[in-house]
Structures are given as C-alpha cells and as structure tokens.
Length: 68
Image 1 (tube, one colour):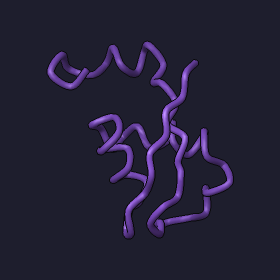
Image 2 (tube, helix red, strand yellow):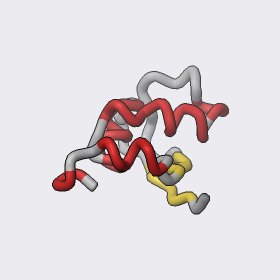
Image 3 (tube, helix red, strand yellow):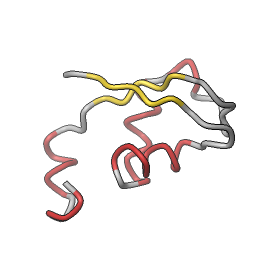
Image 4 (cartoon, helix red, strand yellow):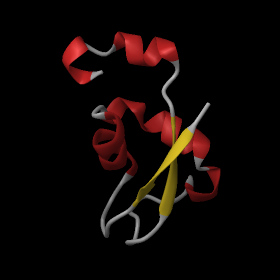
C-alpha cells in the first residue's frame, strides 16, 4: 500500500482533509487509522504532515464513477 501525504492548513479538520484528499468526507476513518498520533486533534494548525493511505478497493469501488 503506497502512502501520500497532505500538509494541513490552519483550521483543517479530519472531515475536511478527507474531502480534499479523497473527495469524500466519509473516508476520514482511513485517515484517522493511519495517523494515530493525531487522533485527539480536532482542528489542525498549519504544517502538519498527514499520511493518506490508498483506499481499499472496496471503498473506492463504492464511489460513483465521477468521484473515482
């Protein structure tokens, strides 16, 4: 599984990051799982590197074609 990263901007929250990275805020659980050190962070400061794992095949297959 390859990982990319996302650098937060001031005020980012888990659902917003998931929306920016995966275009689906419901995928924030994958971000939380991959970033246990930040699990208690609700609102991020600028400059935090967040690991963004690839979505499992089943999760990406559930997305409509225009969101894949």
